[in-house]
Amino acid sequence: MVEEDTVLVRLATDADIDGLVASSTRLFAEDGGTRDPLTDTTWPANHGAKAFANSIASDDNLVVVAVHDDNIVGHLTGVLDEGSQSRPGKIATLRSMYVRPEHRGGGVGARLVAEFRKWAGDVGADRMTVTAYATNEGAQRFYQRQGFTPMFVSLETTP
Image 1 (spheres, rainbow, N blue to C red):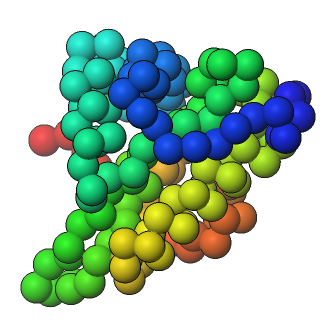
Image 2: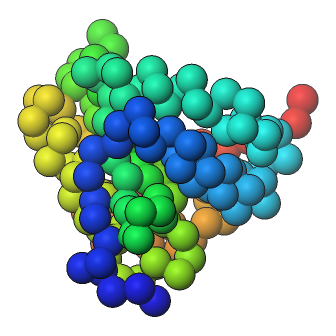
């Protein structure tokens, strides 16, 4: 495990896009790629650069990176939604997060979520939300340690 204080957590810039695509590729392969047969694990390589560039440029999005020795070792993305008529209020959604395995357990993930929490407060969000695969118990435990509590359960089947 790498010492937490050697990892810089900061807002992403366009110069980080290649590293963000690489981090997102790892996330897709490790998480969705092993848990959801519908996950297109090539999506980051094919579409990630444009998606990250758009998110970095948007006031309603957050893109944060964790950097160690000039390499991106983790990322977090978030988006602000205005809610709906039936559930009004601003919702900050933690869309994706990844920390390389050798950097887990040292507080890097908690620092990424702290940046998300600060941003959510700064943009006036009423709630924060995140989803995790039901079989990813480690992610669920991590998010619960960060103060998230279960709210909805989504069930799926084939037609």
